[in-house]
Length: 154
Image (cartoon, rainbow, N blue to C red; front, top):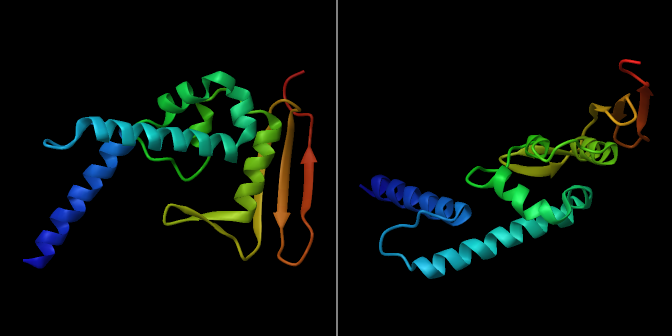
């Protein structure tokens, strides 16, 4: 019996968090005004955190950051990679390199970024400079990298 109650409570908590993160709909009997205000505060904090974590993205989108964030993130959890950024339009080379650095130094574990302790390898294509960059990170050693380019049609 206790398992069913816990399961029901977990389901209710998940629904509550989903409604807060997406701006509704809210459960019947809840304080609608309070829920909307809390939802808006959480959304504002999320957009502000995005701008602080990715200043290049904020600079790229400018005053459209909140609007684009609403389009890309509303109602869906952030994916464990940089796919959500694809909807922002062309990603500058500087941001692609920063994303590569994050992937080299961190990995996704249970929905969170955690610091890597072992070796890592990664690659990305820089569209602006038409270069392909490969990087190898070995613990206790310096970063090994090389690039090939320019690539593409002439």
